[in-house]
Image (cartoon, rainbow, N blue to C red; front, side):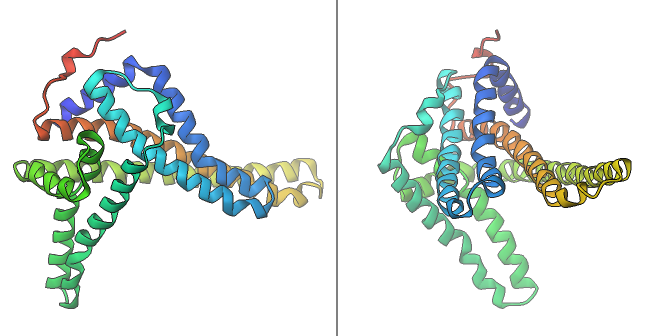
Length: 264
């Protein structure tokens, strides 16, 4: 199933390169805007900018689910639908977020028992996380209510327990590897940037550069944030397609197979 999911993601992106490039750039701007404005703009604007950024990030997250479902069902999606306001949908997702959060935290009660309670609590939290993972997908895809989506998500995963756990482990390992690569690049970037800066000071033998050290550090921070955003967006976009395919397969929705995607 996971190999088929990767094939679906690869073929979908190959067919819609322009769409995914625009989606990536839009997500990059949304993610980077607060950091850039923190450096360049008036600090009084920071709070409203952060709030706006949070709203747009939520809309982006919801759109990624819609996008994956649209590509699976019809082979196409529109960026403009990201900004289509649906208050009822947002309310259902908010209620589902609260309900899932409460259910997922119930195993914390076991943490009052040392060692064994901790282990059981962590295991149960992982199980509940996997069983409740498709709640948002069901609300968006089938227009279910929050409680109905919770029940349906558990039902979908029920017959694919070990399969779902294996996919969870693979995604977790891929995520850890990606984070290690990402942090490695950021570390090298910071070392190299300071090395270059020191070299410029020695080369010019000028005190002027010393006064620009803060600006140089801000530039390095922006580059590091850019690395963060790039890796995160790639994982989110590709991951959304993978998860939608897995969700549809577990749900038994086979009406749009990989072979139906026409290559350009």
